[in-house]
Image (cartoon, rainbow, N blue to C red; front, top):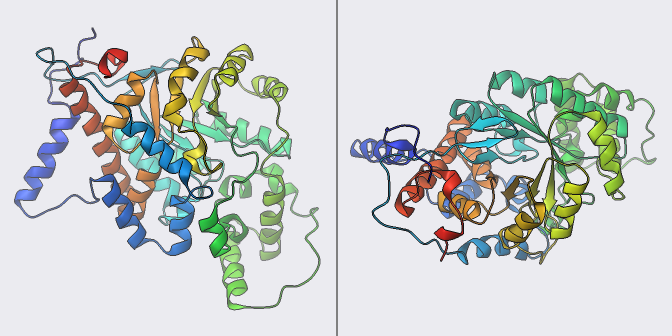
Length: 420
């Protein structure tokens, strides 16, 4: 069994103590500690379109529920009289050691939650040494977020669009800004059927939101004078004027005219995914970069075996947080079978992580680390950078305490013996 690296109280007791001592003076946590309270507080803070995009899922959102139910169905089994004063939470991935097995998942259009968007998230992640996976659909360019993070770890999530020069450019830019891995998302070759957004008629990209990587990319910008917009002039309305104002504001930020922004939104929606992406295409991505490549969205064991055969470096078990297929299997449900099929490839888990005990369950079932998504977006909405930091601290603190109460000395020691 691994031994802890230090004899300090650990992040769990430290966080508890901070909250309780602050409470003596009447100060409550900046954001709710309870995950459901956090979600409800964000719902009160955000307008309807923003909350719908960040919180919503596909169809009747049965997959979102399946993710949560999968965690509820796994039971931890503690051992007694074998604990330690502190725990080693660290994890090693692709030659890098991270302080805890938690990464921040790539979330698009974070400007819906807070004006500082990805910059605030990056600073919070950097302050705590947690890797932040930059999204292709970010609200701030990857170079600016990387600069705000200094030497702290970051990965880059890639959507493979029909404009392959833009896809290749994104990979080169990610390498240049210090990304330690490329995460290729496979489960969004088409946009899922999302009733919350559809009922509001809201797709943020058509308003210029979430396009920062594209609007700062030389290859994408070179297309803006050649793409033909659909003919016809929509009838003026307050909603169209609001859309034009949003496009114009983003144009000013990125040095583009309103006409170019309209073209950018149209070109993006027509080209940002490739429905016909195939396994054979991965060989080109392997040629484009020497960085580790992880495939995100794997659920079937046969796909895990194929990823290993194709020379990929890792797998992220994910159903995109329930945003793509209604009635899809929960990610945690498939984790053990994917881990078995993946062989020596490290497997991470995304979708449904809400608490530190969720992290422990995922690791006990074979994951090397997990991706935290919606909770940090809710923290961002409520309190910006500080809100993101509190959400991360809370999850890591509960994970640390869960390890201690299980009688486990290190995150890497978790396994089937810790499950009922």
